Length: 588
Ligand code: AMP
Image (cartoon, rainbow, N blue to C red; front, side, top):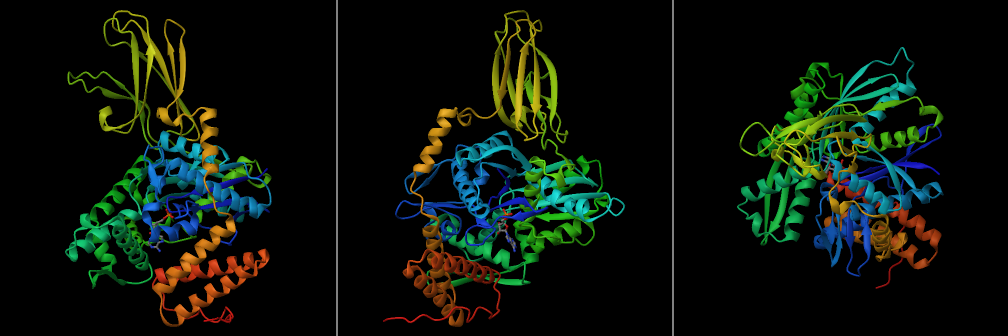
């Protein structure tokens, strides 16, 4: 059975597989490679995913969830029209959608996948990703970091398309800037070895932060009170901000318009203005680049190529910012939306030990330091970090240290596990705590060996063994709630399956009609006529009740609507959307 690679993105998701000696992206039934990572519950209680959910979000944001990848591993509860979901359950619904599309495309059942995650995902977030896969009926025993996947795509060129003499040693900086996360990695590539040497990242820095900064600037410039906005108004203004931000990729200046109380309020947006309205976001980006390069023991001038990955790296402001930082032109190669998916497809083949890729070696590193809290020398009771695994250690790795009791006749040893670089544990992220019994004895007389094993999926296992009693304990550190028993897991999976899901063609119909209606209201003149024709053409096919006709029309129409939508987003002025669809007779 084939193993597929899945790029489960904050905004969009994609899947890929190795076929006929190369990576092939997997399209859904309508021919789209990109599936929006959005889940909605419609007015009839049906669960929608992908394009249909994206349309529903514009109409009724309170019934929809997006960007939930940002909250993977947390207990954030999403209430969608009375149905409650955790982030991993929403991700499971997106994964299920991808699995179905892949099964349709490949004509075989898919039960295993390699999934990419931001390098900076912590234990809980990685565990939640594996859990999401299991809930979707997919075994995922390999998680890889998104920048590593992107680097693999670039290096594939060197490995397959060049001879050993031609292949140059490369030192890549992967700038992976998505909707909600930024990962900066330094990757050493030589022949068939791809070695990640340093990673720095921020799980809460992405394109949506720019949308929010633009929306805030719009409010400030037009004397609007953001706090007084309803959820629907906030979503609409953020959506308009996102469209204008994206339009800046193809235009020097964009006029942002937003109607309020009968007036059409506006703000001009340029790249320079973006620099001015979000200086903090650029500062955070700069610090991450400098940290990754210095952790790799390099200087900015040692980087031979900057690889842009993720939708937000399309922003000219980001490209200008990087070229100023590196003091040279940043070349944009490959489609940033596809680089990760292609790499993960390649990795799925490596995992399957496919002949052509069997010799490729890829090593990854631990993105943050991991340690335990020990009693400090100071009397402030704060304790201090005893680092077990330093950031940027090559994975997998194992470190063992010995600890002794700190108080007289202590009955147990508490092992608080933290992730982060601060001296004080409290300023780092606590990722778990375990208690281990020890015989009562004077301080310092009893002790334990603690081993940290950080596996290739970036999940930490802690092993504790007593000096004197022979007692041992091994724990995978994830917050209690998430460590589900097999029974609880299958109960959850059944609950998800039991929710009302639309049939694929019904979901597609919903996406087409909602998108059609929206585009009709957003356009005018010949474009509006064109949208009208498309909808009529599709409705006509639907009325025929011929499954083949419906399928063909659905595929064609959805692709056309998505293409038109993209042109409108980039405020494109072309007129080529015309005369493709024959007019149908209409009754009045
Ligand atoms: P990703 O998570 O990689 O799918 O990236 C999604 C983010 O990329 C969203 O915040 C989008 O607004 C942003 N994005 C996509 N295309 C563009 C573009 N052409 N210009 C600016 N931002 C973009």
